[in-house]
Image (cartoon, rainbow, N blue to C red; front, side):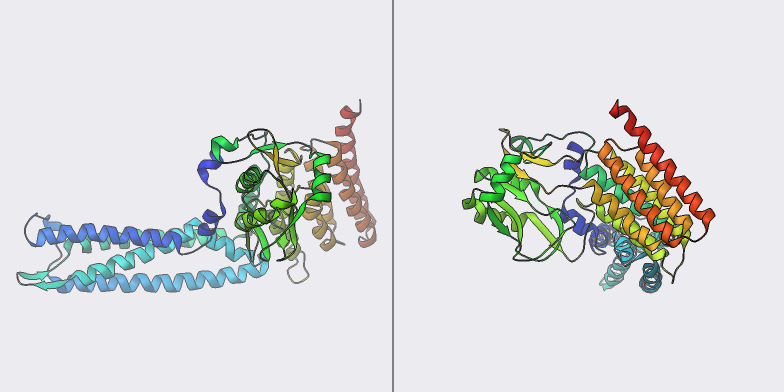
Length: 458
């Protein structure tokens, strides 16, 4: 889609986003540029080429030097103290939310900008301090630079207040869960388009993606007569360059079938794809090494299931005896049902990439709706044994997803999950009244599914 091509959602941009140096480095460069501008103005004023307003002058060099030293010392102290305390607080929070909490903190643009503004102010103050020197015509005092440093100090105070409020809000549980849910929605929109996308190779360097059934004959040919492509390195598959692979397949007149999708763990030396004809396997293997990006952890790039796993992790941690936070689990279930409802309305047909002549060049690894639903509920169902409140909310969540389903097979998956929830509750819930409530909610789920299936049957 055009909007996505302008947004450049590639793995390099994602890697830069998940760092604490990229944005601060840009702001440091901006600080240096501002200093060069103010320094040239100060030099021109010192040699009387221009006249500065009287209110901007700060006396001789000693008061100016003391002001800059105080600003630089205060800023670097605040940076060290505030971020040390923040990381400590986030470390404690990650013990409840999971270790991925730290990655979300690093990825937060507000945190990156805050660090960048503080460090840029420190660099500017140090450069201005170093510019104070002695000329034959008297001491050189960077009046404009000192004034700008004082303005930057006021900006830093405002940023500090924002940062404290931002951190206090961002580590609150509802905000953490809602943030993960927003990432899930964004990943779903990127990976599961609401409409079919057709993009020509010749016009946009991307293959034409057709959502339809995989041709069985071609798959059988690749399986029986195709060449095996091995993984070059181990790690979690973070990004797949579908366009690059399809172009390579067209150049060598081959068809590639991928065995893995982003989020899977691949092992070096193990098969990751098949190519037909076999003679093209070596060229494709080289291209695959460049098109597949692996790393030590999963990312949301092309992997919406990762966001579901994050919500599930928070839920099962909340249900553990050490935490015993039922309401957190209920909140996670609410957002999981929202994400699954969004997924249920999307096209899950197999993905076949064709060139501009309509020939199949790349067959991507398929997504499985049953696996997604099971991934979202299995671990929570197992951790919630003997907890009627969580069991009832799981049934209600499934019922909420039913309204968004588009096929009877999707509703069958939801009904099967509901049946497993009820079976587990009969063994773990001792109170008969609680069991009656659970059965009532399950019956409501079954009735909703039956009602949704009825029009298709007639």
